[in-house]
Length: 306
Length: 306
Image (cartoon, rainbow over the protein chains, first blue to last red):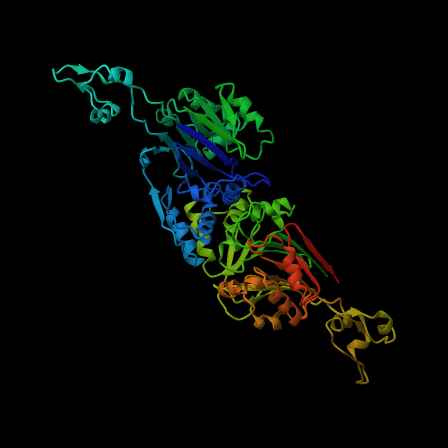
């Protein structure tokens, strides 16, 4: 069970010469996800040597330009490169119309299957699932409809404890799958052997929560409780909490408070406003509330393993 | 009379790590124009220290992504920076719908006046004019509706030749404007003094022609005849003329042929396909036909003065 997060861009909307807006590439349990796609993301993907072919699922948090203006370019480029593999885009209602209109007017309909999964629910939903990973939305509080995303490894099967199993000759190979699935074993005499006595716990799962953009919003805490890694936006410091409130963004201290209350293992801060010249100030402010913080920086990789 | 062209991006659509798609910033006779606006243009504008406030007129050649996907980001950024000055966008029919849909769905209507001038004529048109400069379209031949643009200084008034004028005491100050406008002077006795004997030629005008994207297309020659500076796309070399024909692009040799037949002073090549690793090959091929060629490169500035 492993997780590897590459920061492709972590700045807020106002452009800077060498800073990109939000985008992240997540590898979790051998599944790959692109999260948000600000302008220039396709160049950042190349810059950080991520293969285009790995991207099959893109999640867009909200329809502010610094989170999706790079999507049409990426989709078009996939077309130019004769991609055949299907691409799934999850994002707020409206995203399909924006992309389709541009593909139509540029006469650049792509040949590969391009599927949109438009979101409009204000409740958390399971929006992606396969045998390895689940993705749930985390409704956030921003100026427009916005979701964070919780990426969650699926629990593996229980491991057979062969030393214990061998004590019961009646247990046959055909019983193993039931044991892996957590079932108790019922002997011929009706006596039950608890599953716990015959199997070992699988490795714990990893969970990554992406929460941007959002005001301070305690409703997300139950959804991200105990997760291993949390990216929470911190556009401002406390000196501009007035602006954070007005624009529905968070301060570094607020992000750290959420991390603390949700008991996450590690917090990543990002989405810095261009008004702050030193990003270390975000770390300093956050650390007054929560200890295990790192700053997002372009190209930085966060890895975890269980 | 002066002209200064800054290349912001000069590569074709397939993304490269450190190469940007088409965009140019032109200063001509103290007027400023942005030509095309591929993804990442707003970052390039900052990179090359061009003031956002100078940009009041944007010309989009055609609706292929590598020529306009950066427009929505630039327009949004102007909004974020509380721009008040009006912005005029000239481009093919459809561009207004694309931008308006995104401003609507992102709930980011800008406060400054944003005016679209949509083009659909297949004939050359005068689309901008003030007392200093004219801009005419140059219909091109591409897979979709495409215009090049001819930027042309306006001829200044004729200069008074005071040494000659002083020989005719009857010529008064109130006659000067007529002389500057090119009129002859009629004496009381009915005799005519030719304007040429009383005035000197104004400095010659400068003209810049932007022609991208286009197949080899001799119809443009009369429109760009004798111009000082021509940017003509050269996506391919002659080794892939099959592909140039198929995709309606030009080779370096074809671009140079157009430059030669139109008798332009200087040719700039650009819009290089990523299949060529050495851009000098474009120069080499073009120079077999036309001598005064330079290669577009990001950040390169072309200046001319009369």
